[in-house]
Length: 333
Length: 106
Image 1 (spheres, each protein chain N blue to C red):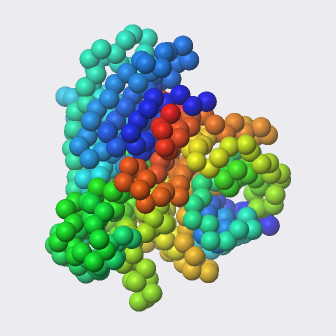
Image 2: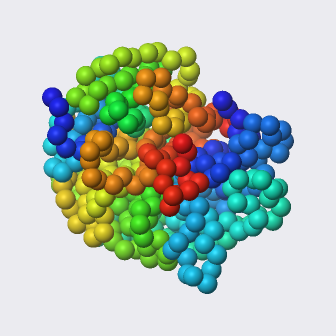
Image 3: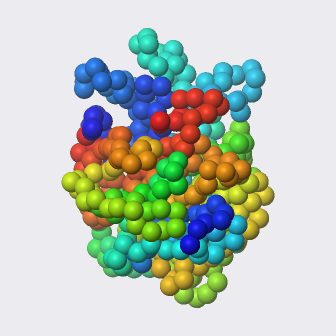
């Protein structure tokens, strides 16, 4: 059943919060009433605009226990945005997700936002080649990903100086959906995995993707420039017990989720890319705890060049393997 | 082959879904869709009976925990529809909980 109101560029769908579906788009965050009897005109009952838009499915908690005791422990939302920031948003108002009463005073507050820096040691120097602008782009190591994307469809012989915006059009190196587990928020970016403190947004640790060979480095140069690579950058991680697993092109990496220390790392046996978010397969008698809001599905579509300008990120879905009392409202089943 | 440990399932551009040992990363088995140079894939989903569901554009395939095919079925929807499944039922998976068209956002 398809009933989402018309949005300009759908970016992601979150878990259901009571009767409310959280949707993100290039405009921002939207709350949608999922009850069957609601007229289409009023189904999307609240929107909050974020300049530049949101590019991920949100990680959602109905009761934010990481907030100070003096503050409201209401719903919190974590998203990645086109401005290369990770945001923690707090929903305020009289809506409890069940919609037993009309929500008339909803507001969204930015609790924190963290700029994802691509530190020089991860890759000190890049030369990127745009799909349309074939002149190589030289990136300043201190400015991370400047001039990755030309804002306009300029002739291919123009230089980086003609690029006005580094993110519009989808060449954003931060596109994956964040995954929340315990006190850390995990975000996959093109240079590796970033773990942020849930309460403050400070970086707890960062695991860089190690490039073993010249071939890998050459491959890395093209991250962010091809639509295939763009799709790869939308893949998220999965957290299980004490480990976090993510893929980066042809490598799967397993880390200690608290420290970021490497547990294992494997290359694809035939050097192909891994193209889905990893899923952990549990057995019934397993003692491992799978985070109930880990990303289970991520869907990527073949986007045309013109369409990419309108649709910065393929959508991803957070769903849950089981419902837990601590996760009330965030599970979709 | 029967799995003895928890595992990681991940799809690859060579058209295969790999089952990796969660503790070591070593490959336990792989399932081939028969199509190489695949550029997009949905992450597989697993039900409470340890069955694995793999959606390849318009085809849904069910595998057991050893990677053997249980059944597959061609579905009547286009890949342009974002099928966002909830937990599938063991024998009759409900694949569409919410869906949205990329182009029109409906």
